[in-house]
Image (cartoon, rainbow, N blue to C red; front, side, top):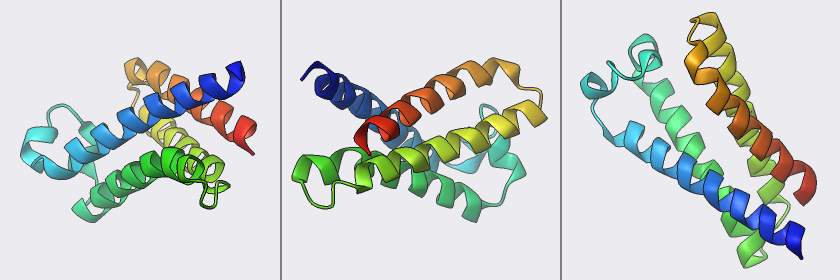
Length: 120
């Protein structure tokens, strides 16, 4: 019971973070994002849209399948997708020597792996 509640709280936090960040980056003009997010100016717009759409889909996937009991196996799969995004983000930050961004990436990676392992 406690583990299930803990997992729901972690899933909720991850869903809120990834949905909101995905939506903000998706809807905000590239010119406003570029000073804060270096990767936005380096990659084409289609990749930005793909990354943000993946974040939003992952956020929904963390909550809806298990909550609605419709293909609940999609929840840990969504957590694996979020983990993959975090691994790729970490690689980017290491390559660009943006070491201040790595701790948050590691935390989100750890939380998503925790959800994936406990929901499979």
